[in-house]
Amino acid sequence: MGVTLPAVTVEEFQARLDAAGGPATHDDQSVTWDGRVLDTKDKVLAFLAEVADARAEGRTLGPP
View 1: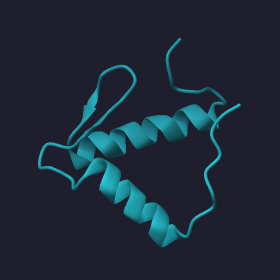
View 2 (view 1 turned 45 degrees about the horizontal axis):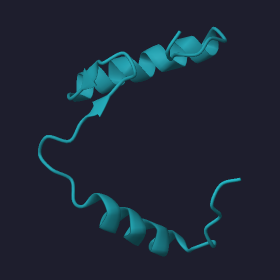
View 3 (view 1 turned 90 degrees about the vertical axis):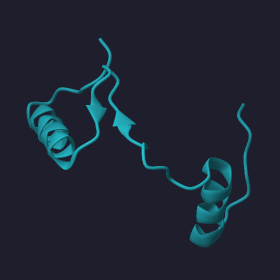
């Protein structure tokens, strides 16, 4: 069984996230499971379109 933490407010949760990860840096970027770096707005929008197409077709994106 996992660890259960007490319920917190949104503000408390955000404070925990901020404390744990520190502030964003200039090189923060998302990377997909297959290694694509989503470091521009166009790449993110293309990835989101891919996700939408997959959902519409009833398939998932992820490791085989």
